[in-house]
Length: 226
Image 1 (tube, helix red, strand yellow):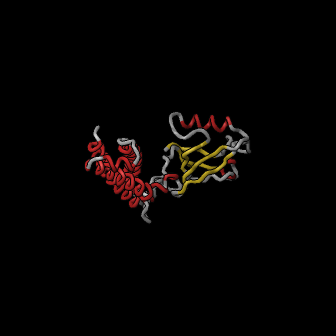
Image 2 (spheres, rainbow, N blue to C red):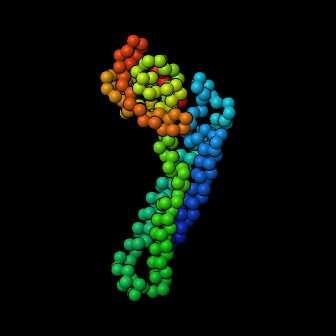
Image 3 (tube, one colour):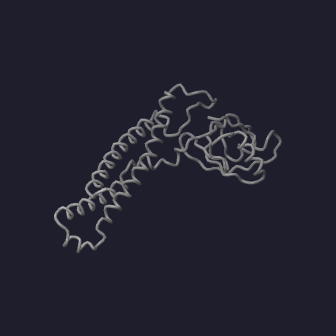
């Protein structure tokens, strides 16, 4: 692809990315308004019932769209970076000789490449800062603590009713989740397990040790898949 065509493609990708950033920020604003559920807040109440104060299907659709946009945004950014690297390598000679020996059209292209690089650097600091700063709470929960017994290992180690689980040891999603959660607890009896949960929209990292106690199981809580 010629330098001019590659430059045009890169500019088109940057325009597309800018439009995506606008949409992403709009979704974040809607989800994170004072009455909103946040990027990953509970969609159920403390008793495990669907919240009545929010439109749950709409919230799920917005969160899903945000995840799709972020993935596509990353792919487009990678493509833009590759294109700019190619444009920079079109004339591998030194800047001085390039400027001296190039014709007006080539000098113009070199100037546009420099401008594109500057735009990329500026964008890297300004792109959807609010959305990107909250990446740590956007992993999709796969289970929720819907029952927990007082003085159980889970309760003593910090788990609470309504916590949304995004990580339990080596389990972070997939198939056969309940069986894998049970197996992970059994395999780590007496050993601390790293547990990531989302509580009231905030991501928390806990350490839970499955162990024998006076009640049933090694944790004393029940997970419901979400």
